[in-house]
Amino acid sequence: MPRSVAGDLQHFKAEFFRALAHPVRIEILEVLLQGERSVQELQEALGLEQSVVSQQLAVLRTKNIVSGRKEGTSVRYTVRDPLIGDLLTVARQIFNNHLVGSQGLLRELQRQARKR
Image 1: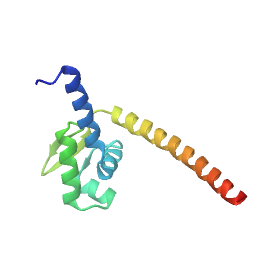
Image 2: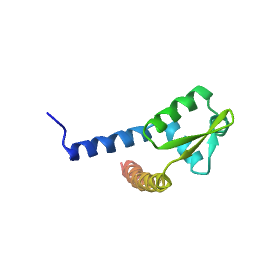
Image 3: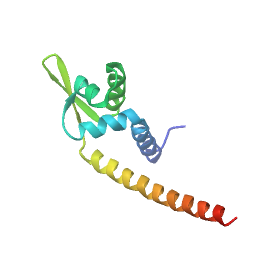
Image 4: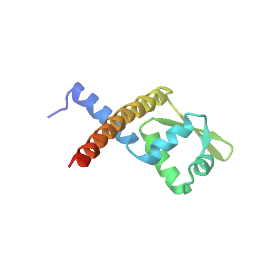
């Protein structure tokens, strides 16, 4: 049975978020949002092996989240859409909200434990 256009859109969205769902890919994007970088520059900035950086960049390239530009013998990578920065900022705000809520819950649990 063919998938509906709405189903295709939901699949596209899920694949996009799946591409972001890796800590190294998030780190790469955070560095690239500061400006264009080569694999070697990313490797140095993140303290990771070249193979790890290249593998994660391949995922981001496949999903059109980053693009590469050949410069001499290296490739310079950049984030295709600067709104990715906004997305990461909003996600960070959501995480902070969750952490604040969790800290409040933890304080309440500790307060109740002291009462016993």
